Length: 103
Image (cartoon, rainbow, N blue to C red):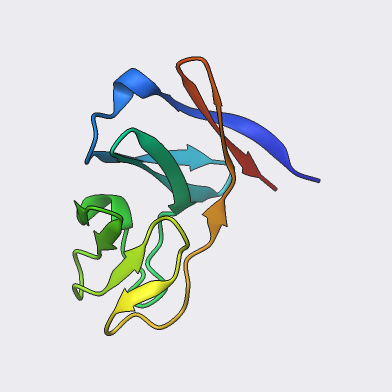
């Protein structure tokens, strides 16, 4: 069963910024792309590094370890060596709060 967790306030992340949020035994990455918020798993599916330590370029996150990229809106890999999609989470806005639907 899914539930929603508060991952940040809109004022916590300016457009183009991201941050790591811990939930249970997993890390989540929260991204602000031009005022729209997205949440994915924080763990790169290729190199096992934290994506929140990478570089956000528009809708793409570049992993700091091997420089592969993913589209944060879909989780799909967009640049080698990444080939396995990231897990994405449904986001709901409530006023100035950003919630993610997690298991």
